[in-house]
Length: 467
Image 1 (cartoon, helix red, strand yellow):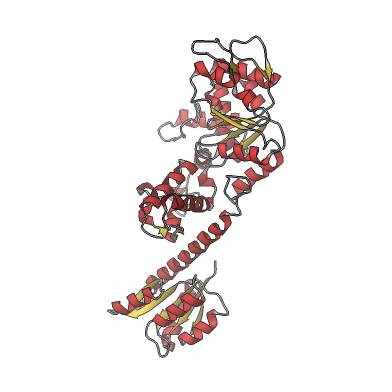
Image 2 (tube, rainbow, N blue to C red; image 1 turned 60 degrees about the vertical axis):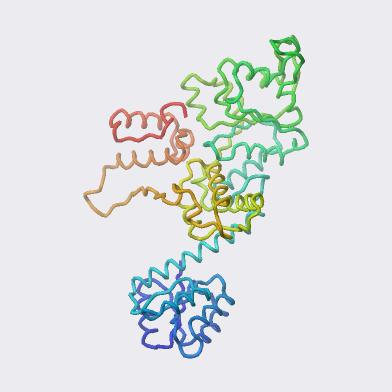
C-alpha cells in the first residue's frame, strides 16, 4: 500500500528533513509551506495522512485541521507541536486532528504515529464500505457475506435452489446451517410451501418416530387423538433435519425407508401416507467418522448426501466479521433504542483478529453485549468481551531465519497438516479436501503422528473420534 503523506511546515529545513527521512521509511511524500497551499492540494489529490506543524505563518495548524476535516473528513491529521504546548495540542485534537507529536521530533516515533493513522483510516473506510454493503449482501435471505468462502456457498445455493435433490449441510456449530437451509427454501421453487424444522438431538428417542411420521389415536399412552407427522406437514415445502448425526440408531432404517419410498407409516397405523417434501439435513459432526464408529448408517448417509454444502467457519470469512457485526449492531440498536451506528476502527481491528471459535453465534452474543454496554455512537474496544480484547493470535511460522530453528521436511508437513485440520474445525473430510488428500490417507497420518509422539501432537477434539 502506498503511504501518501502531505507535509505542511513553513520551515524549509524542517520540511526537507522530514521528507528525506520519511521517504527512507517507505512513505510517498509531498510538501507545502502553508496551510492555504495544503488545502489547495488536498482538494485535487488524495493523501493517506497530513502531517502539519502547529504554529505557522498565516493559517495555523489548528485551522488547517478544521479545513481538512471539512474537505477530506476521512484523512487523518497528525500535528507537530512544541514541547509543553499541551493546550494547543488539545485544541488541535478538538479541531479534528488524529494525533500529535511533540518536538524535538524522533523520526521513529513519528513514523509509527503516521502508520497508525493510516491504518486507522483504512479501517474506517472498511467499516463504511461494509455498512454500505450490508443492504446489498443479502444475495440469499438471511445470509450475509462477500468473502470468497461465502461466494462459493452462494454459487452452490444458486445452482440447487430449484432442485428436489436432498442436501446435506455441514459445518461447525454456529456457522449458519439453518440460515442456509431457510435461504434455499425461500429462493427455491418450493417457497410457497412450508419450512418445517426439527432438531434430532432435542427430541427424546421414544417420541421422535411420532414427531417425524405421526401417530393414530390410541397408538400409545396419551395418544388421545391422531397427529400428522412432520414429513407430511412439510409436503410442498422443505423438511429440515438438524443434527442428523444424533439420530438414534434404531430410527435410521425407518428414516431411510421413508426417504426411499417417499411414504411414511404413522405409529400404530397399518396404512402408509405419501409425502412430497425436499429433505435438507445438517450436522456439525463428520458423518464419515460416525459411519466408521458404527453410529450412522452408510446407506442413509448416501441418501441424504446427494448434494453437500459446507458452511465455512467465521475465522475463514475475513471481513465478513465486520459485515455481520454491522448488521447485528443495527438490529440491537433498534431493540435497545440506542443511537449506536457503527464500530470504532480499534474495535474493528480486535474483531478481525479474534478467532471466533463459537462462529456467528458467538459474534451475535458479543455485539448484543457491546450495544447494551456502550455509551457512544460507535462500539469501542472497552465494550468488547475481555477474551476478544486480549486475544493474541498464534502465528504459524513456516520460514525461519535461524538455522537452529530449521526442521525436517516431515516435521514441517506434520505441523502444516495439523494446522489445516485445526482450521477445518476437526472435520477430516474438509481438511483432506483442502490438502488434496483422500480421507483415509489423512487419517493414517494423524494416527501415526499420535502414536509416535503423542505428547507433542495436539489433534483437535474429534479428529480420531466422533467429530
